[in-house]
Amino acid sequence: MRGRNTTTPNTKIELFFVDAAFLAMTTFVVGANAQLNEREQLELTSPLEPLRSGITVIQIFDELLAHNALRSAMLLDYTALRTYQVVDGRGNLHAEEVGRIEYGVPGQKTFVVTSKRGSGLIRHWALNPLIAGEIEAAGVKEHDDGAISPANYTLWPLGEQQVGPY
Image 1: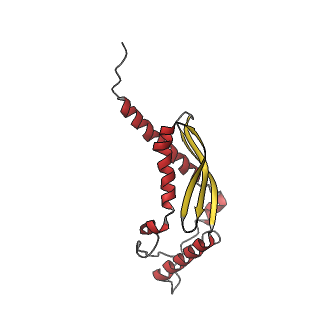
Image 2: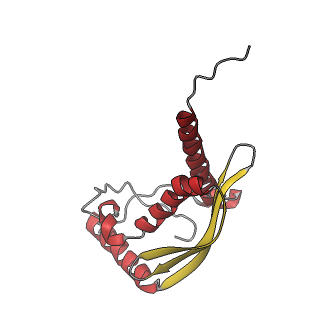
Image 3: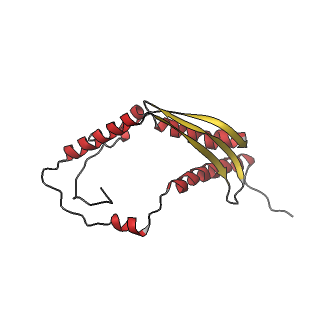
């Protein structure tokens, strides 16, 4: 006699989508991690020095905001190829969307799909929300509540540290 399966079909589908979304997000996190060689790691561990006199929290924030404004002004637009996949633990591909992410000033992104493979249902429930979240994150004005600014953060400088050439 076979054992009785107590998991309903809907629960199996829900668990599959949760697993698929987790694997898709994990793939991007693993791909985003940078590796440092030993020399770079040593450069990052220089001693903490006392803060120079005359340096204020307002000055630090002002310089950060000025740098961000300059960087934003220089970034006109870009296009990057992206591949989003849902792969199970055995390496089987269940869904994939390949396309171009296009960034345009001011802070607008679009995703143009160039190819699709696998389950449309998985693409709809796992990949499309991931892509939509990336596009939404580009809306700078909508996400000022997370910006590093005096309105959102309190800063207590501990000192200064040489980090590589900076």
